[in-house]
Image (cartoon, rainbow, N blue to C red; front, side, top):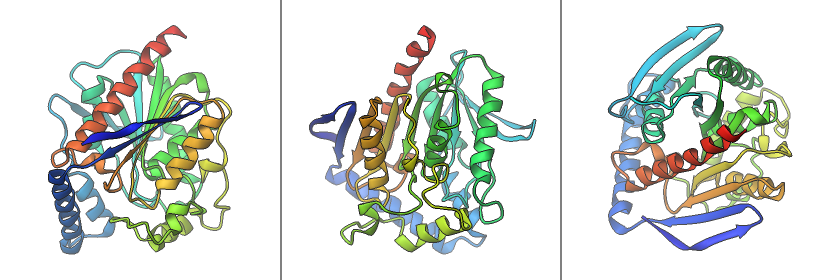
Length: 315
């Protein structure tokens, strides 16, 4: 993987494109084939199959995990062997608001914390259709305030897919001075599904079909307005934003969710870094054992996070 061309800069928006070489294209095809075979052969429920797939991301060496169930908050601490004090990550998992658990996502969280040297808390939150909007948003907000009470410093917010939408939704409800920065992987931030990449017949997303996301959005919203700012943070971007890194694959239905948020956030004067990875699937960062691009992307996340903490100490 290597960067294509020079970065485009519009105000504070930085966009980088990454291209795959032939060997990694073959690895990407193998990852997608294995994922398809997993779902085709799995004997349990859809939620169990999803968790089993997500849990394939290995827990990094030297990382410890600790379950939490108190004060109305459930989840897992994921800690590197040496964790810097007075800083933490709130990692919010994806799953189209219907799937996923904190336990399954410990591996992906561990791959971040071992690189960044910062502990992460991965919360469980209410899932649709049993608990529709705004239950997930309320659950993540409660976990965020619980985390702030656990340590004196500021926190970074990280989320993939629907989790990316949830952390960006949280920005409108938080004290901006307590959030050091935000990282999202393929964030789903427009439940109105109005992005051009979503409806463009030239989009060939290997993971999602439009009807999958349309069904998930309907079940999560349960009649709520898809342009409600808490449900779709694209429509409620705060005036003051912490530094933001967005990573997304070029073939995704959600590509324009990432692009539009980056453009609008940059127009407000925010520091935004948008990274587009050519020909890679939704949340490819999980495939750290198979894809060099996944490792490189997570290394860039860690490098971004390290720039946030000096800023936090100066405040």
